[in-house]
Image 1 (cartoon, rainbow, N blue to C red):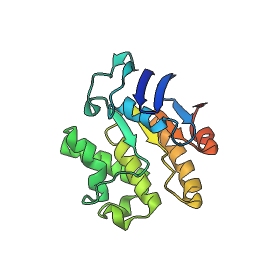
Image 2 (image 1 turned 30 degrees about the horizontal axis):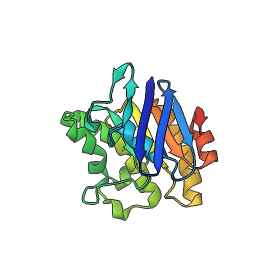
Image 3 (image 1 turned 45 degrees about the vertical axis):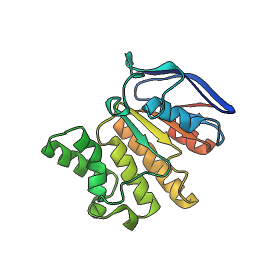
Image 4 (image 1 turned 60 degrees about the vertical axis):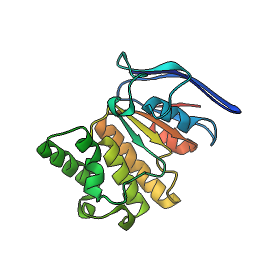
Length: 201
């Protein structure tokens, strides 16, 4: 279970949040832009330091740990793909950093390429892909190291309506297959209710 109680203050803004997410559950945080949703994800991932509180997973205190030791996958709104790497290399990035053996790394990348319907694009660079394909690469990269927690920051916000509807169901299927505990932030009510087991606002 993910348990957190966090506080963070900026000039003119204060965030104070307490919540828990059961193992394998997807919790959506629904709110308008500027309400602190992305800040909360960065605090959970360790990309920002809280002013007070804690992040715990399975009883382990993650608060003092750097991001690379938290075993958290993060899908950014702008995908943040590495432009100089191929699709396969982007997906493998976290596995290389975690020193996965070459055979296990190649097998995991091949599995995700197939699941994300990206196998024909494995050798392409991000700029050669559509927005929907880039989103699937970013999701595969976040899932590749088998994180215990997945953070999704407006994962469909950069897509047009047609692609968003198509990938919404793809994302729901993927989250169910992986069974990973997920914290999703969105301003879209339909997205929240379709993807999440619970919704908080």
